[in-house]
Length: 99
Image 1 (cartoon, rainbow, N blue to C red):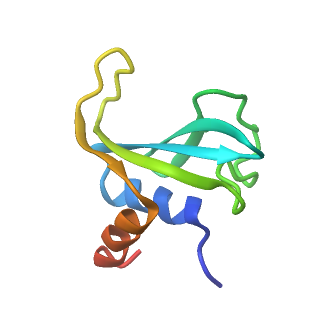
Image 2: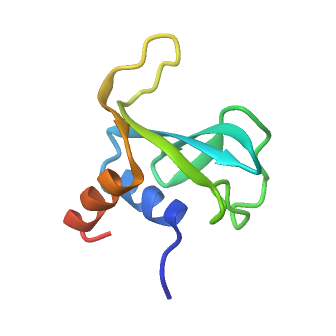
């Protein structure tokens, strides 16, 4: 069974708990920003389901960019580690980590 994109990104943050992923996506022609931290995902722009089995990042989502931010995340003054990564860039990082 293959891990979904969301599951892979969550595993990344489990391996790197000092980092937060800010994933900008397009879902059903609407932009959303999802924060992923210590294995959990949450939308910053819409409500997030209480059920952890309901994916916040659906498979049909189009990833626009991924920013890696130092934890703790402060939306007023984020400390960027890397900005504007594409899914292809992040996929390389995930592969290097065995995710």
